[in-house]
Length: 343
Image (cartoon, rainbow, N blue to C red; front, side, top):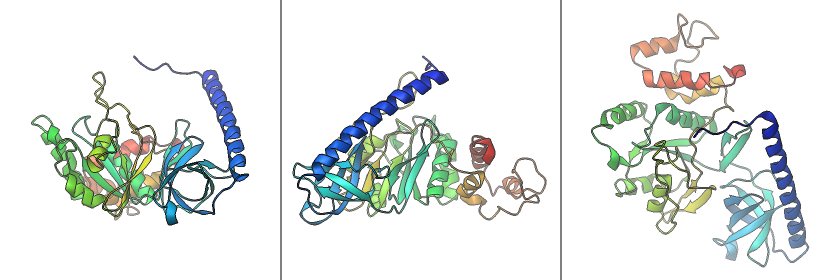
């Protein structure tokens, strides 16, 4: 059944109610912070945000005797929005709680627009984005390329990960080989694994050790199964594909940070079916296609749209086989989806 569309008044009323609830929660949180700060708090020290729950976050102590311990912390009202992976300054309470007093500068952040088009960070201090896809649900180059553009824009190293390799068969082998060949030719790091059977998982662990990674990809590609395979005992809930749509069902409800025994960290984020790029410009999209780098600025016309213009360097490269049709189609689809001001 199709989702019922809300009219403007209904959307406004929903936002108003949500805003009122958020204001009441913030007021309660402010009183809780005042009560804690009026009591006996410990000295300021650094911590790591490992999960976010509305007006509270879970942090892991990074110093002294509290290192490795987890605390549910309140936030001072003047703090910016915190996300999993943030490093903070906090003061511990005496009941397994505490107060976050400051956010430390981020080395990087992964952002995406929310339902209203507002840019929202989803993870901080990440240095590797693991783009997970699978034979089922059927992978699409356009979605993978959106993640690659987002990674390039954020300055985060990408790793392409084909999970559920055990589902490769005669029906999907040719299409998958063609899809993967394009990324191998571009020298993107690419692994094929099966979280279910364990194939390739040791190689994946080596790629993750020493990095702060985040898994992204459609629901149903097996991100939660990968976490369970990489971190036995975590027991992240696993969802099956919807029989009606063939798409995945969401299982992860909040971004959470996990530690690998051999070093490195993983931020497991909620499944994202459609990764919007409304926050990037046409120039940013072009920069996200690495094979375009030596071609940009060489077109006959300065405002070339790389469509039908004579003397277009990208079209010539497409004709010569230096740019693949799959990637050019993705580029055009992404650019066409941008706000008209950026097109």
